Image (cartoon, rainbow, N blue to C red; front, side):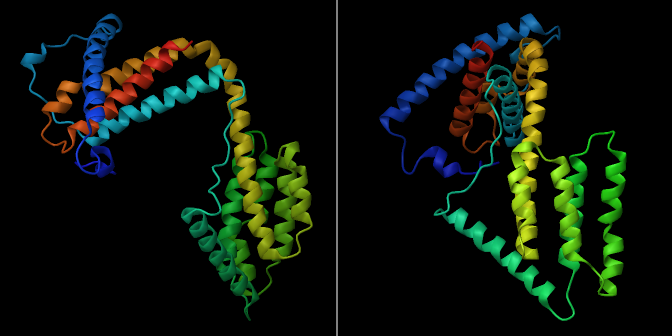
Length: 292
């Protein structure tokens, strides 16, 4: 199966001398890695294995390589959380002048323009607004602790999509009232750092712009919740880090195809790119395990 972005992996024309040199060094490093892999596996695993010469070469799939990379990503994230006291998640904002940033702005603006035209129509069309309220309800419920049953019931009752649809059939939906309730509930659930954002929401006069800003602040609140969870888990991860990383690294060794298997595989159209990917994630794993 070809890889995504395979052309970039193999280069535009032919590999340069420096690329060939780096690849030779990679092959030498991979030989050392294979010895370490066998030693590590024999020390930490009690499973018996047959000699390599007795086992037929198996086919390597893209999913197998990426599964090992995902395991490696999880281990590295846990390591970073445990050793870096300042680690936190941040929103990945696209540059405004980038193509992706402009496309995102145009698409979002078109969505909110359509919503405004629907609410301004005679009679108003509420279906898209109801779906937004339903999505907001689920986000608010995700912030609640297991003991928040009273607020949970209140949110489900006020933002009940079936009830809002019945009101819409009689043109009796109080969109502004629902928005005010949402903002008030967000004020009860948000971190103190979001108090200024809540005050700005309350001062917003346009209902569509208000809904737009509600989703923006909800995204910030989700990030706050994720970072709070990280801070809560950090002491536990610090106590369990060594054993966790050893266990995960053993799983990666068992799931990652060996270089010999990759080169013998008949379904990998670009073994050079696959081998470099394997070398990269292996080097990354050794770095994570050793930097204590």
